[in-house]
Every structure is written in C-alpha cells, then in structure tokens.
Amino acid sequence: MAGDPSAALAALEREVTSCRRCPRLVRWREEVAREKRAAFAHETYWGRPVPGFGDPRARVLLLGLAPAAHGANRTGRIFTGDRSGDFLFAALHRAGFANQPRSRDAGDGLRLRDAWISAAVRCAPPANRPTPQERDACLPWTRSELALLGRVRAVVCLGAFAWAAALRLVHPDTPPRPLPRFGHGVEWPAPGVTLVGCFHPSQQNTFTGKLTEPMIDAVLVRARDLARARAPTR
Image 1 (cartoon, rainbow, N blue to C red):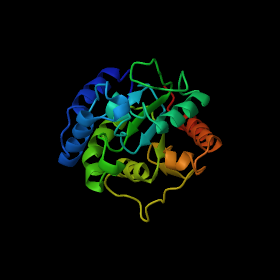
Image 2: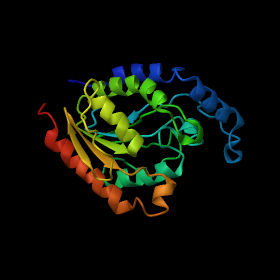
Image 3: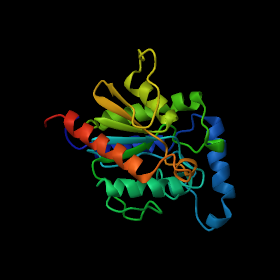
Image 4: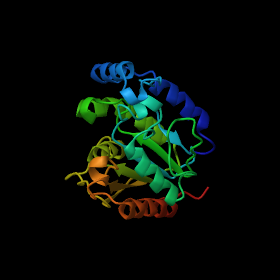
C-alpha cells in the first residue's frame, strides 16, 4: 500500500475499540475494569478491546495472544503495564525497534520504529485463554490491519496461539496441509510475508529460562533481516 496509512489505521482503531462481538470477553474485560487489582485501585481501567500500535510504515509485525487483564486491559496499549511487556520492549529496544526499553502507560513516550504490535484476540480473556471461536471472530480486525500495513514482510508470532492465528491470516482459503507446527525460531514463507515463531514473553517462559534475552534477540534480528530482504522497492 503506497503512502501513509495512518488515517485508515486510526479509523480501524475506532472500530476495533467499540467491538462487542464476543459476549464472554465483553463480560470479563468489563468486570476486571470495575473490580480492579488492589495495586491499581486508583487507576481508570481501559476495559475495551485493545488496538494495535506502532509505526504505520512497519516492515515487522509482532502478533501476541491477547491483552493481559491488568496490563493492556488497564493501560489501553498492548503489552503495556505487565511483565511480558517489560521483557518484550527491552528486547525491541536492543534490536532498534523501540526508542526506550520500558513502557508503563500509553502516554509514556514509547515509539516504535519499523515495527507494529498487535494481538490475535483484542480483549482480555478469562485465565488468559481465548477460545478458537473468539480468535476467529477477532481475525477480521487483524486481517484489515495487515492489509493497511502494506510494508509488513515479517510476522513474529509470540506463542502457538498467535502462530495459529497468523496461519489463518496468510492462508484464509486453503491452509497448507499439514499445518506448519509452531516452534521457537521456526519460519514459514507465506505469500508476501514470512512467519517467524517465538516463545511468548510470559513470566512462565522468561522466569524458567524457556525464553531468554539472547533467544528473543535472535528472533527479532532475523525478522528484521527477512523484512529487509523481502521489502518492496518503493
């Protein structure tokens, strides 16, 4: 897509943030926003679907699972205000994709360069487990987003759930058989983009050493190199 898609992305964001397609998710995100966690009792929770954000001319898209109940569901920006985001933004800063290594709230000055962050499901799910039906209901938002981000050539899938969603994005009609299996560092060359698997930066993975800083750094460098190699000349 030629030109700057910022206006179209802003219009899509307005649609996303008003979505009420999934009754279970709507009930949960709003209940969490009302009851709050004690540490954030003084804050006003976002409590709505969380849009993607980043550089409108990004060549790398990072696709997560869903907003954290007391992270993005509180702050209104994906991966902002929780431990997973702390790990991810530090890695993005080391790789040159972010102007600072941490993010606490949506107004803290964080800017992304050549990267866009989104999620397979836009509402915080109970127990952090959206259903396949909820994933598929949310998929059109991400498909529209990807279409507007016309320079994206690498999609980093943060976890198996995001990998499954990305495969449906890039193969909407005839998915490959057998389906490519998720794994850290696994690549799948799809039409127009390359999918790259990365373990999710959850505490379950980072605290146990399943995902280390060198591991995520290597994935981000690889995604950057793939995006540059596949980028259109324009």
